Length: 116
Length: 114
Image 1 (cartoon, chains in turn brown, green):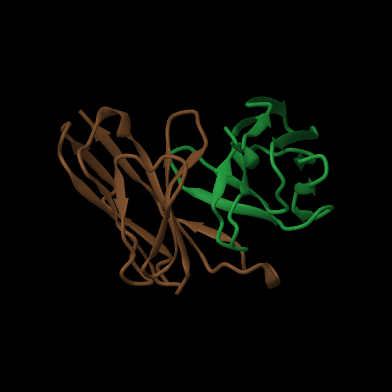
Image 2 (spheres, rainbow over the protein chains, first blue to last red):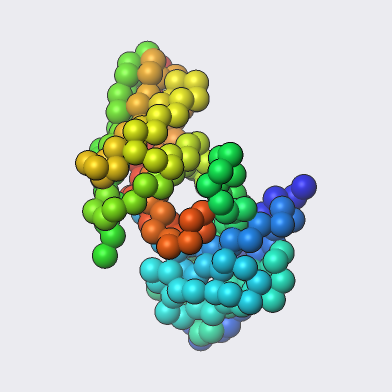
């Protein structure tokens, strides 16, 4: 079990460039999320998905797109990178449900993105 | 808009002492989570609190939830250096139970000195 994997680990972009951050999980989890973490702050939810084909916006969705064509993958697209999107991005997944403590959310290792 | 506030934001303490981190939130929720983050690392799940009065303990850490007061606490007993990290609480705002649409606190950076 690899858990939640993210690629790349580091990325530098120029303003206006686009890119896709990859996220995959091999735990057959229904729910997946993308967060960003800025220095000295907690995580803020960008987008999340409750299953293949279903996504919704979080707190800070502007400038980002997501899709969920399979249970395993949840890529995050930056449409036109801006310096304000310099951050650490975390993908997370959870099986969902509340019974038996199966509610733990697993986080990927993160992608450190710098936009110049 | 839901606000989740932790205090203190910074905490420096001596080994062997006890202390409590507080997490207040501004809307009704009965699902709250605590995470640990080491510098440059990802988040590690510590506790899942799913009802009023829930109390969970793991080693020197104990977490509790009072949904009426909209307050959760993370209590550290007889601190050791290995517990130095940043601790986050997060409140689940999803309408679908278990979907975990989380709003995080700012984090408490805990430093434990020998």
